Amino acid sequence: MNSFLHYDFLGMEVWRIVALVVTLFTGFFVGKVGALTLLKTSLAFEEKQRHLAAIIASSLGRSVTFLAVALSIRVGILFLSLPEDFVRLFLTGAAVLVVVSIGWTLFNLVDVPYTLYKRWAQSKQSKLTDMISPLLRSSLRIAVVILTIVQVAQVLSDKPITSVIAGLGIGGLAAGIGSSGLAKTLVWIYSYFLGSTF
Image 1 (cartoon, helix red, strand yellow):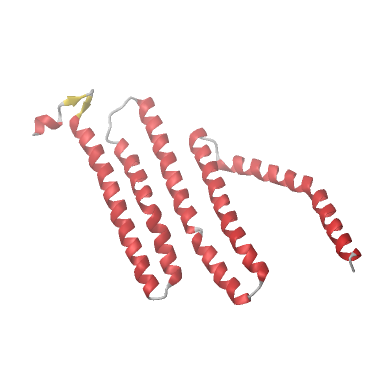
Image 2 (cartoon, rainbow, N blue to C red):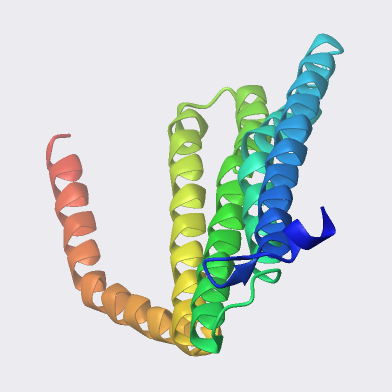
């Protein structure tokens, strides 16, 4: 058995390939067990009327498998004996997977502040708060997607994220200044027509 594990298969020792497969399987298994545990916990919290804890557990349960598999790929690559360029390429790909899995976790966790706001809005009985709640959820999810894309760009380019965010901030400032005249005009037109009807 010992000689079989040191046998070369496609220029690599078999034990390295077995270690990679075991690592991937373990990550998938741990992720699935974690997801099932969190989803059962979510149902238990829901029965106890602890809605916020149920939403947190459910959100984490939807994303824990992806996160566990991404981390197991990152660890599993270290077992392979590949040329330096391939190792760098695979580690970069694994880092992108880890960033995307963390982004997916945060994307699912957007339901937590949305639920808190929705509960607060129901106590206010205002149509404005009811209209803002879907906008809040969408805005938070868009922000998570944009920040995940920026983080992936940083991993791929090896540039610091602060310069990318500064560029986005300057672009947003320019768009805001450019649209301020339009906003003033729209408010003036609205107030003009509202004032002239009475």
